[in-house]
Picture 1 (spheres, chains in turn brown, yellow):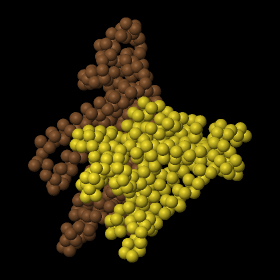
Picture 2 (tube, chains in turn yellow, brown):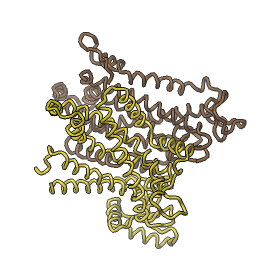
Picture 3 (cartoon, chains in turn brown, red):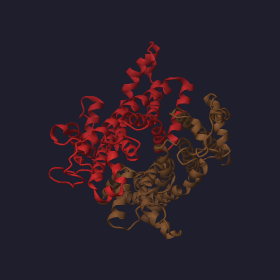
Picture 4 (tube, one colour):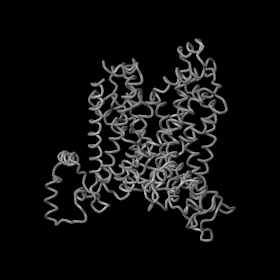
Length: 320
Length: 295
């Protein structure tokens, strides 16, 4: 188990490194002078100092050398300065946005998982009933509607028409922090974020459970006289959950995409909003850092799912 | 999916293509997709012939008017007809989608083919690259690419095309790896067939089902990606109409609250189109899959 964990961790780190190379090369292809990223714009430099800085940063060196220089700086926590925001160091800026995004995504994921699995079970058990057809139709709609559209529609219905939710932001400005205030702001975007994801999980859960219900051990359980509720919840669902867990882990990236749109519709002060701002103003240090942190998060979640999977499914022999 | 699958014994004289067509037509969701999509496509292609307003024509007597007999879907803040912009936006969105899918399909096939036929080293390098491209959340990758390419029709097409090929290349590679060992390919190689002959005569036809299904579903996906990019203001810039940048206007709370027709109709058109294309794509996938009759 331990060797497996270490091997997976090593692969994850290698992926992260490769990702940084890829993003580095991509952003170097972009127009603009990369030295601007390292200057604090509120303290302009003389041309001589600029040339010196360029030499010190190795920007007159070939690309691979430049990359290593960047990597060394990044490893010591220096991701450069934001071009757009008057020379704020990038790393604290980005890290400050991790919390709100994690909160939004975490809540959305929990809602999506619970709702998706529950409706998936109902759909599979009442297969081809009108309830199943209705749920499947809603799921199709959920998968086909982009996150920004459901976000707009949700905002319009619940914040504008019925006034049951605040129209964006994370906290009411000017009011001391309170948990209820945070929750009131959180619940609508989190629910909307979970919609598409829940639809995907529901579809997967349904087909996975249908497959399991045809297995011999389910027939055996029924033949033994186990109550139908137990057959479904204990014998079938537990096994049907395995592929669903993989799905949740491996499609976490999709949820990240959804979160970006929700943040920009609801003005949620997270990574997504930061990233979109940075992209529209071509604030490359911020883009680079935010991309890497998000990539690290996704790789980490994938790692955790793999481990979780190994724990849940006794058939997987990790210590070979 | 749908129940009445045709029995393929004695029913299809002309082989697998015929059977696939029959299977497709017996799929209710897929046919419904066609029924929804074809009229939309027709309206988008021909609207300039029968609709009196142009997408950028300004009617100063109708600013922010709701739906009426003259402007069926209302008009926007500078008096442009929403219906005309919706149809023109459809043109833009579908053009972006189709062109980017053509590019990404070609790219995906070529990379997959190279990986399958290019030897172990090429294969390893390309597949690691694909792994990498698939680790990053697609929207993040989209944003990184968009920050380099900038806004406009061509950059948007390129960004979407560059984002979408990895999945296809992996499927093509798997198919070609299997094909490579088959007798007729080995025979062709033995007779001195070059890589071009192998790919075009044997590889491409045998990957056709994968490509058609990928391309169809990818068009729906590309429509969504374009809308997403333009919605964030990073895709097609105004005044050119696209479904995404029409929805972008709803980021202003005045439009969102008071002129819902300006964003709800493009939103509905988007969802309906994507839903229809997805139904068609799913139908094609089931139609090409010989095992689907068994369910």
